[in-house]
Image (cartoon, rainbow over all chains, first blue to last red; front, side, top):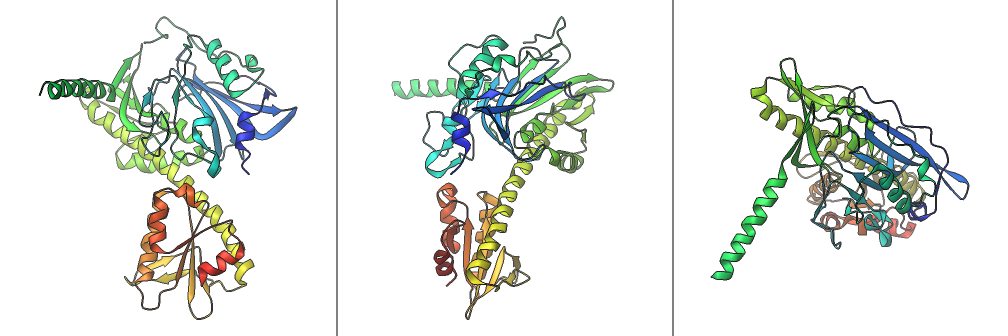
Length: 174
Length: 249
């Protein structure tokens, strides 16, 4: 039986948050991988991944629950939340049905929710992932973080710092 | 007729709105970001970033293809595959991006080339992830075949079809009187079509072997299951030994 539903639905705790990375020289991307505990046990390779651009404050933040089999190698994303994505909205595949999200394009803030992508009777993910709209108006990083904690079932997500954003006169952007 | 006119107007408005949203640009202090109507495997739009450079503009994919493949842990594939694809279009790469610097009057073409190359990199690496699944099934399959049939595997798992093409499979077994061909098939169009073509080619032989596709899950294949089933027998990797034996008969 696949462990993914158990991991996705369990109450979790961030075992340690060691801070955001230094910005990538090429892109300014910053990220972290924080190991997740379930009932006091740190699950192998199970992390909360966060990503943002240091030079793009208050846009394009990603939180993803993922299982990294081996560091730097193939991994399996379970759920992801994109906030004000610079790549725009997410376009959902029309096929296969059924989902109310089939064929719809959702806004640049959206949720790749485990529950709409997992096919329980076949024990696998949909091959082409769906994303749904987020019902709440998330205006600030702190609101996004709280929303992520609630929906990923991570009870101490407030230990994740605000990304190391560099502000200048124009950096807020459109 | 009135309803047809209203309907046409409604459609025109919907078309205008859809076309408007197919390409969008946002401008920051030093950069412009363009979302294009190309869709990465994850469902995100391919996005190109433009910044001023000495000779005009630097057009890059902003590292978004890299971010795309990083999500499946395949980032180590980026340097080589991005370089292969970018070189064909006269583009450059670094550790994270595909880019080119061009005079301003060439940015339209550069935007298209960078966008398509960015999409191709992500698509190719996602396809290879499916090949890795095939290798996993194949490894397991070989163990199962030895357990069920004993040491009857040919050292070179190849056969020549009616077209005279030579095909390589996961395993070819010499059973009583006729060979049996087993192929591990990942849930990816390329894997399914390649197997289907090869099995049809073998089926056209006067003394055709038993052709068996081994998949992880029939249900997960969806419509592609029908394509495989037309070309030969299909079993799941977890099926009991007697199913393997009947499939090879």
